[in-house]
Amino acid sequence: MAHGRNKYQSRENRARIREMFLREWDPIGINHICPADEYDAYADKVYVMLMDERATAEEIAVFLLQVATEYMGLALDAEQIQRSELIAIALIKLRSEFETH
Image: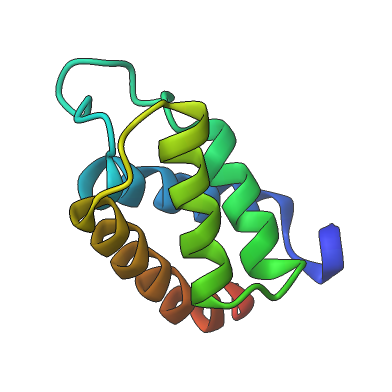
């Protein structure tokens, strides 16, 4: 168990983040045409940031913007910024729920 978390629950929490990424972040618009695992690596990193590194919403949003612009090659625009900020805030709200499992 990493930091006292159940391995099964950790997997479930990561799956929730992946689902959120597909529904709410999805910078390349693939939620209906690509495999559901498209954002897995980013979801795993964000889970570590959220739970182990205790990252803030701002830090998570910056990471997601970096992924979208540097790794995916998308333009930095108001929509990318807003989407990244909103998902980061939603993730921070889940932290306490994740901690109780």
